[in-house]
Amino acid sequence: MEINLEEVSVEFDRGHSFKRKALTGVGIVLMEQEATALIGPTGSGKSTLLRVIAGLLKPTSGRVKISKKSGPIVLSIQEPHRGFFAATVWEEVQFGPENQGLSSAEISARVEWALAAVELPVEKWEVPPFLLSGGEQRRVALASAIAMKPRFLLLDEPTIGLDRTGKESLVILLKKIRSETKMGLLIASHEPNFLYAITNRVLLLEQGVLRADTTWGLLAARFQPFAELGLELPLLLSVLLQLKAEGAQVNPEQNMETEALKELRQFLRKEREGVEGP
Amino acid sequence: MGKFFILDQVTYCYPGSEKTGVCQVNLALKAGEFLAVLGANGSGKSTLARLCCGLLKPTSGQVLVDGFSTSKEEDLCEIYQQVGMVFQHPDNQFVASTVETEVAFGLENRTLSSQEIRAAVDEGLTYFHLDDLKTAEPHYLSGGEKRLLSLADLWVLKPKLLLLDEPLAMLDPGARKRINLRLEELRAAGQTIIWFTHSLEEVMAADQVMVMANGRMVWLGSPLELLRLPEQARAWGVSLPPVSQLALDLGISNPGLINLNELVSEIWKLI
Figure 1 (cartoon, each protein chain N blue to C red):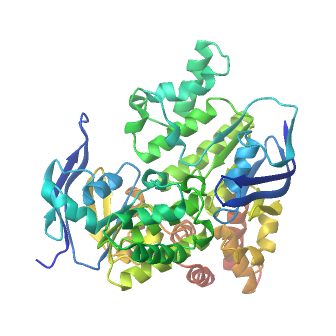
Figure 2: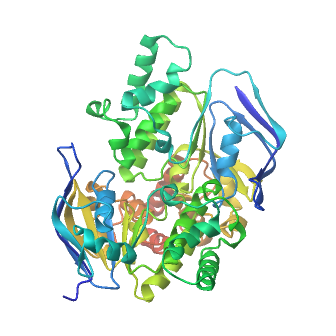
Figure 3: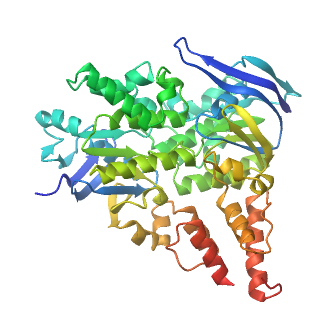
């Protein structure tokens, strides 16, 4: 499955004197199995882009082509719990699969799998979702999305309101689901450290224009102009860059968090053992 | 006397729930103090925030703002004038159809002249970089812009106590810095602030940090003291600053690190 955006532009005109170009001529190809980060300053068009890909918003011009469609594209919106409407958590998560024409046994199996996958305790499955804490509501929202077995999952600021444990388990959960289902992932977030743990490709939007379609490693190598936009690199990449600037023999062009950590540890070990002098 | 804001044995049980949302919390703040309330999801932070502004009434104990009690009906009007709360989800507090009328709404209910309202609205819009969006509909703003708007709404009312529930969520680092600068200025001007979050990094400038777990206050001290208890902080579900977290992961024994330069120089020292 492949999602192809061709020259996509979106202009909002809400009847007031307020008009705004949310996206301008965006071209992207997204492949299944890829995990991609979507970054950019507040108001740069990230949420709009996700809504266009999900088919919730029609581009003012340009088009979105989906080829070899093999399953749904599911968007988990910002503050997804705001869309809760069901009387219990179970019914909330059930709603998506129910509308996919599945058997009731399959629906139950999907709901159970999804709720277990997000590690929501069983005693909360029959509780009204509105009574859960903010972090628990996020888990329910994520369960609702993955219960539809998407081929592409689009997440808009999934870490808002999550504490450290919540973020860590979200990383583990998303990695697990991806290894099980091979679904494509596109995540918009302001948290580079969270994104770096899951994604390797990066799309960077500024005022509705796609300024970069690259990897974390290459982004680190030419980050200066983006720092001026108020963006930050993942901490590990910043550490490697600074060490290199201070004369260390390290390679900051690391596309994955695990590789960057390995590079940093290796540097420490080599230097300690005195294999290479500074 | 001398304490502007007092939590006295505050307990709150949600109706129909056996679990207490907040349990016997005691605290006293002087005017101008900056308190951070930290804790994991579900630890009772947002419930406590709602108790502090009078949206919830304690099941037992009392909340006093400048001597007025949130449990007394006749005191509430005064408390609502003095306390401003920025909610975790900005959409919950928007009432108007454009950004400028949204900022004006609170002022219109304060018996001000239209010139005064106009001047205050313009000042608020400029202060939070919302000038270009003044005719936009609040619900069509981006997440971060909504956050700025919710802060502007309250800022123009000049509340004596400002409650912030996860105010930096959804903001990019640039916008976070802008908001932090604004909040620093407010504090310098004597603003009393209570900031609810799970991220220690956001509140390193706080005078005091209170940690909550299971609805109870489990720790009270300075941000630096908490930084020196990394294992404990993690167990309470507090997010350490990423730099401190990485330092721990690398086995660096100085847990007081908070910025990149400090971390890199500690890394060199390891060698």
